[in-house]
Image (cartoon, rainbow, N blue to C red; front, side, top):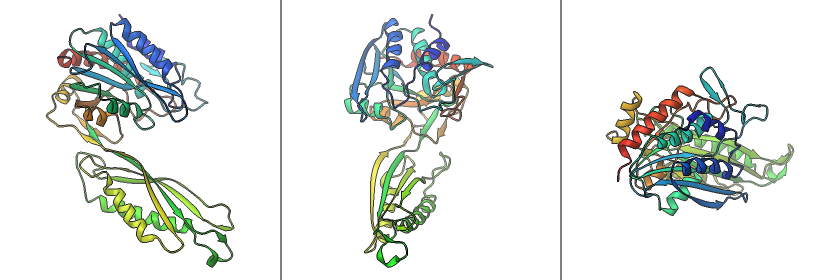
Length: 367
């Protein structure tokens, strides 16, 4: 009998931050899956940095129908001062290490749950690069071979079934001005001062979108954020360029381009003979709302004892829905301790996840 905590320790000890190949962690997962009798294949590609990445699809039966348990293999970077990041240790009923909650605990629980079950089509799907844009899930959608009837997407939700989440969109705003000597304002046009006017418009648009609310989410409206600003060349030079990085998290019911269109309109109004503004969208990822009458959601509510909620962060859920699956996000651990030094998962939740996932396999892994 394989042990979830032991597999989790093995996974934590591998540095699988997105800046590295996820091959080593896939090797461990594939070894365990094959020992359970699963057929395996890798969907491989080379990322922009020249690193080999892959999704690992482990199948008992066909890749169509049945149930898929889906989790990502990559983690966010960790502080070099955290000497326990890759040295898993147990304390007070918790297992600590990078990825313990997000989301290697779900990977370990999936393998152990699979070991306890037999029967119909079951897919264990381990993806790459979720943390940098759900790139592995996109590859699965583009390939279109995997077609589960239902899917549980693993994320640290405190064992709460998830009814959906907002989308994630990203754009870069480039404000082009005219450089000049700062002592002679008439010789140039300041891109940084124009950026201030753009920021006021972003704030206005954010307030406008608060009127388009959905009480299922918290906050119940699309949020906008300018997380990065860069501009200027020197303290005594009128800035010729300023860039803003804008993100917005749209409600599932809202057009992904609603906020983008408002920003584009505002930037067009702000342009002058000396100021030119470009808006370039880099990501337009839709959110998703899971029907409240979903059999999978109802099952997980009863099994966990927790009522379904929405979450404020993005996941691979929309890509599984796009593949035709009735899907839900669910898993052990708490997102609020993920992405931090001292990340952990309660071992009690890990074991409970094994039991619930095994019951879900028995219930839904049917032709």
